[in-house]
Length: 225
Image (cartoon, rainbow, N blue to C red; front, side):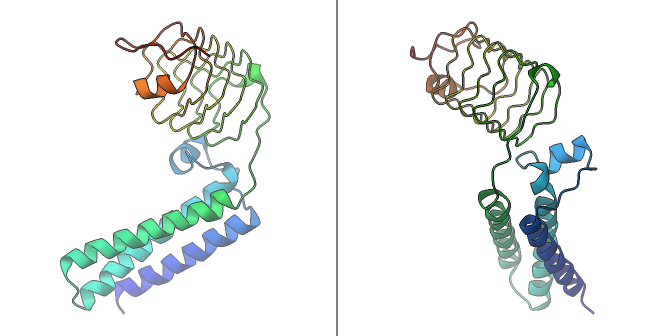
């Protein structure tokens, strides 16, 4: 029996399991924070299992497809191209199942108890986090649109891909914060400190408004609000 047959069967099983988990909101609360960080940086806890299942399915099905094409004499470029296409289609499909079709999850936080918290993918739109201690918090992919983060401590926090559009960032501290891909359109940054912020770009700053307290060397302040 060809190895690719087992890979295809296991891949289809994992895909079905992912769809069932997404539709029924199955969670795995015992997953450690480290696993959630790697596997679900842009997913909420309820979306982690579907992402893991579909990710495993995409790997197994791609390997199975490549094995099947190898047995049937397909050219090398085809054995590389089509598994990649299959993986991309499955991952995009999983996003629609776990993300677009699910209802937003709203986090309720206590500003004094947020230091170092695992909040990857959290839905925090319009959250009241004035003065919150978010030092070293994991906020990758978090939805912080229109949230109140005035005077919040975000030093060394992970804001990879987070959405801060329209947020109140007055006097917030972003020293050594990871801001790669973070959206800041319309955010108020008067008095905010971005000294040594990681992967911050001038384009991101220009999307915001106000006069920040500190910016990386060579950066210019955006327009006034």
